[in-house]
Structures are given as C-alpha cells and as structure tokens.
Amino acid sequence: MSEEPARIPADEELETVAELSKRRGFFFPASRAYGGVAGFYTYGPEGASLKRNIEDSWRDLFVTQEGHMEISAPDVMPEPVFEASGHLDGFDDMIIECPACDSSHRADHLVEDATRIEEAESLPIPEVEALIAEYDLDCPVCGEALTDVPVEEFNLMFETNIGPGTSSPGYLRPETAQGIFVEFPQLKQYARNQLPFGVAQVGTAWRNEISPRRALVRVREFTQAELEHFIDPETDEPPLERVADVELTLYPADEQEAEDGGEASDASRTSSDGSDGTYLTMTVREAVEENVIASDWVAYYLGLARDWYDRVGLDMDRFRYRQHLSGELAHYAADCWDAEAELGGDWVEITGFAYRSDYDLSKHGTHSDEEFTLFRQYDEPQRVERATVDPDMSVLGPEFGGDAAAVADALRDLVEHDPDAFDGETVSVEVDGEAHEVDTAVADFSREEVTESGEHITPHVVEPSFGIGRIVYSVLTHAYGRDTVDGEERAYLDLPAEVAPTTVGVFPLMDKDGLGERAREVEADLRGAGFAVTYDDSGNIGRRYRRQDEVGTPYCVTVDYDTLEDDTVTVRERDSTDQARVPVAELPATLTALRAGTTAIDDL
Image (cartoon, rainbow, N blue to C red):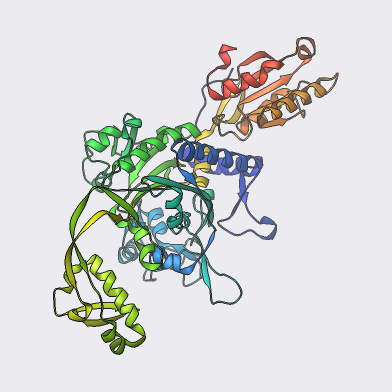
C-alpha cells in the first residue's frame, strides 16, 4: 500500500520534471549533437505518445462530440494572408539588445522577473523603458546596465521564400487559425452555407521568440489545437444549459487592476499560491447572469474546457481563468480569457478563449477577391432603401486613366459601407494609398426602395486556442508526486489512463520455466485488443513496478507460477498499488473497465 503523496516544493518542481522528461523520454532539447538551438524540443517515445493522446482527447470533445469539422492547412502561407490578417504590422514583442554582448531579451520579461508586475506585455513601450530605468535592470548575460537602451518592436514571424528567388515571399504560420479563415469560402459550402458551424485544426505553429525559456512554455515551434466557431451574432446562441452548473475559478480584469491597493470582491477567495484573494468562484450560469463574462459563447467554451482539463490530468487547485487586460488584448480580440496553470510557482497561459468578432473574415474579404460572407434569409421579404452608384466611365476614364476601374470599384465599396459620404458635391476614395476626388454627379449616386429576401452577413468568430505543448508540460508537472510504498520512496506520475503513454506493463515474474513465453502471449493478446503495452523482464518485480510508476503507466500485469496452473494473472493499480487476480480470458475487458472508470481495483 502507498502512503499519502507529497507535492515537491515549487522551486524544485520544474527542474525535477525537466530531468525526468529527459531521462525517461518525454521531451528534450533538439539537435544536441550539433549544439542545439534554443526553442526547439523533441518529444521522445513517452512524450510523443502522451502528446498524441491529449490531442486525441481534444478531438474527441471539440470535434466529434461538438459536431465540428477538421482540416489540415499548410504551414507556409503567402505574404498577402498576413498583410490582411494584421500579423505583418501587429504581431510584435518588445525586444531590448544589450550594447555590450549583443544578446537579445524580451523587455517585458525582464520587468516581470524584477518586479511584481505579472503582465508587462500589456504596457506601452515608454512605460517598459521607464521601469527598466527605475529598477536599474542589467543584462542577464553579461551584467551591462540597460538603462537608456531603447526598447523596440520585433515581429515574431519566420519569413521564407516560396519557390526560387525572392519574388514570392511567405511566412511560417504563427497560428493555425489563418489556415481556416482563408479557406472560409470553400468551408462554408461544406457547411451548406448554414450557421453556426465550427472548423478545427491541430497542427504546428511557428514564432521566432526573442528569448525562449522554461522548457515547453516558450518555444519557437509548437502545436496548437484551435477551433474557429462561425456564428451569426444576432441569432445564434450557445447551448449554455450543458455547462451552466460547471464551477469556474475566474480572475477578471477589474480584480487584477484592484489587486494593488484595492479590496477584493466579497465573492473572492485566496488563490492557491497564497496571494490576496482576488479570484471569483462561480458557475457558468452565475458568470453570465452577473456579466463577469460578457460573451455567452466564451462562457460556454470556458465551461466545456474546464472539465476537459480535469479529464486530461490538470490539478484544478492550480488552475484559473484570467481575463486579458485592455492593453494586452490581441489586435483581433474583442474580449479574451486565458486558461492558466500554476507551474513552479508561476502562472502560465495554456489556452486563449477569444471573441474575434468579424475581424478576420472582414479583413480577408477586403484584401482578396473571394466572398467571406453568408446569405441570411429573411422570414419574409422586406422593402428596404438601398444606396447605389453607377459611375460614368466616360468621365472617369479620361480623368483617372489606368486607375479609372479601381476608382469605380472603390466608389461601389464606399456606398455599401458609408452612403452618407455621397451627400456633398464631391466624394473621396483611396486607390493604392492615393486619394481621388470624384464629383458626386459622376458617381451617379441614388437611393431607391427594393424588395429583398435576405442579406449577406459576415459571421463572427469564437476561438478557443489550445497550446498542446504547454498542456503536456502542465499535465506532467501536476501529475508528478512522491510517496512511500512498503517503506520505500517512489516517484510516480498520476496520469489519467486516457492520456497515459502506456496503458499496461506486462511482466513475467521470472524469465524461465515458460513464464516469459506466457507473458509474451499475454502481451500480444493485449496489443491485439488495442492497448498500448510495454514488456519488461529486467530486474526484480519491484523495480519494474517503479519504472512504470515513474512514466505514469496505470496498470501492470504479472505472469507468475499460478498463471501456469489456473491461467490467472496479477493486475496492479499504479496509484493505490493494490492488486487483484484476473483470468487471462477476462483481462482485456477488465482493463477496459478499469481504464473507463466503470470498475475499480477494489471491485476485483
């Protein structure tokens, strides 16, 4: 029997998990034979299996059970995609370069490490520069003073060229979302032009981080599992009743802003890291009714994801939802909440839940030649006033030459979005950055009543974006524990059977007298039944148990001399170390029930 497990100290936690991960094959720095490069990791045999199982669990809920579709888009996309999305101009971090050793650092991270400020990236650059001067911050590499060193913006995208030469620039995608948005004109057909519908993608994203750090937390290549849920904001409502009673731990923006000198809300509680009580504990229903979460759709996904995090092994006492402050909102987000896990005493974002409104589809609709809208049918035809223009090309041609057609198109676009612009004697439109004045009479502006059966709308987007690598790291960290079994200390991973890299270890008590041959037969039968199995006949049985405990294998099966007599084996559970005898013929069904939680080891 095992004694009560003990959590290791926070200052030892991440170093311990990193050592375990390298030694037992969860993850380790890539390309070490050539000196390695920061921000790239290889998932070993155990880690690749754990990562794949977490991805499959995510698909099971957010694709299969929610009824969404899944695609796989290219990692490399042409430059116009990111011009439209805003990433070329707005996907930046703050960089400061040491004048003495030329090393580069995230300026906001330096401030966070030296102060109590948790989200320095939400601050403007002048304020970050002032904090560096106020705290006399030095270069972490060489100790050179960084006061008066300018902080600049650094675009995080990896640039490449598509094909030979430099005429077709492209970028490695910094998020998988754009691969979904640019294919919306095709995807809406698969959805039969009916809202709402969701499109998921699990794939690699790339960000040229200034200073990768903390293992899988800040890397340059990572896996995202993203869902883009397209909705009609006027008519589509989420099925909140499914998650209404799910309890959430919330850290709203106003509570964060009130933390320094302000009093916490009456509904708050003390956080798990011992800081002042600033969290709100409430159900999804209460959070919506009290307008703590403004978007019903975001609230729905917070509730749905909360139980999934628990399902894959996160410690819910070390978990919270934190609302973005206004200064840190992404350029596309109307509101955003992060799921955060506590790792080594710090809070780390593992998922972002954003209401992206119609930003993305509108941008791609403006910059491309495709339609990024859907037709909404009215219940009954309606008489509406419609503003139109019919530009006189006989006048525009001589006046604007080769730009005439573009000026006419600009007039047609303008009348749709701002018909009041035609109220004066002239109207101004922009073509390739140059303004052109056109007589309103030449534009032939008019208003008329027409009967319409519907209208074209640009859907809004709700996006849960999961960082799979950070979730893997969080699950490993939260699952790690130490306890004492029969007077001997052991280290183990309390991984749920659903995501554990291996479901069952098969051991012969000794590799003689036919025990090894019978154990191999049991192993083959379990593999044939679909279980992830490992076979181990090295060392004493207690040591083999410890090896499997340390990588999170939930069950071990031992073939012994009784097996040769009555064809039963010993099944041992990892957490309790309890054991039971099970007939070999019933072993697959028994392990299936144990893994699903419909049977406990005590029931055997």
